[in-house]
Image 1: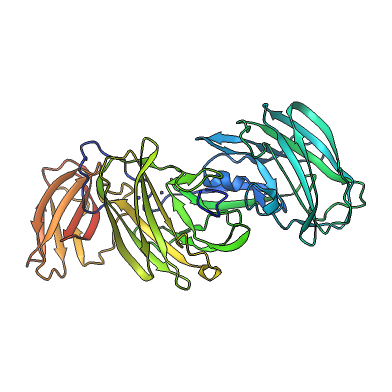
Image 2: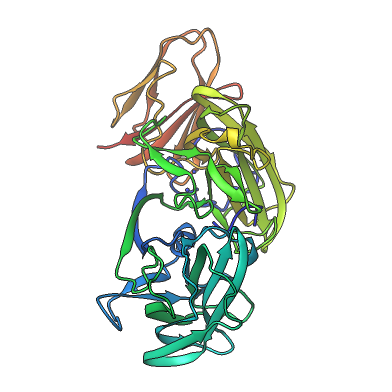
Length: 485
């Protein structure tokens, strides 16, 4: 995946595809009108939980509060998920993970006792050769002074006690501890569905437990996130939303998306991290150019169009990118950087791939990958009405509020449409109508010196259509019309 990642929704305008006999499905939720609420719980005081990764990848949560407890009301249950070739163990740890190597982790609970071991109870269903784990790392002044763990194997349908004796024993009193557990180890032996359930964990040989330990898993923290349907968000574990938020400051309809740069982490150092959305997602621990997902797309020639606002911090820049695939392989990509714009500005990315793709991945982020300075925190990118020009929006909110002084009436209509433009300045405007499948069903030149034109629609079937008006290469108006009788 891109550096600094532990992990990971488009309407109407001009250039038609060369191979448009077979309709390419429209990019879903490009006006960001559809959002879903997701609520999940994590053990209280634990900074990282794999549920955040599951949320970004639109997978079931894999660290859950279980009422099947050994003692008290709750236990913690972790389950490994393998989907689309990506493995995601159920894991919780009391620090922000900076990779799969524990040597890069830091922080933890304050603790000034010198335990001799740890004990607890577990249930498991772990297929060989997979192993679940529990770990405890002790630190003094930022230096690791003890590293201990225990592996869990096989199936245990009733609660089974375990005891880990620290060997060699701690030579000095620590000042902090990192503690965590997982349903699979970080290796190629992970198996889908491996499950580990833990309860009543404590350290032995001490007079007290870490204040924030929560080893009986009775206390949980609930988080609710508004997530854009059909889009993947992506960030690190400090930001469960991936820096993506719903905003009512929209160009059309009720909602748009806002991406905000936040302070994340890269290579164990704090770095500005752009809020990001994509129609694809990155596998865990992958290198560049391994983004998965996307949606079916077979247009060789087309244009991505959208409206945006951008309020950068410092000299920051935002970006929108396109990546095309065929048979699972990357075949072409393009993108643009976005500069400051206090008002919604229309933007296009035309492309000619050179061959017919089968998949497209569209992404946007509030800071480009290179802009990692802490001063870029807070850069805000708002995007709305994102679409391919060959594909009208089907959510019926693509309306630019007559900002160009153009009106169509009546709407709905049964026989005729009257189109009025306040100022045309002698320009020729091309007038086209598309059906809901994106097929052009009408075209004519209109408006040169006159301000009003009437269109006979009596021969059209009832239904929803879309009007596009262009002057040269610029789209000046897009609107849904309804023909009803």
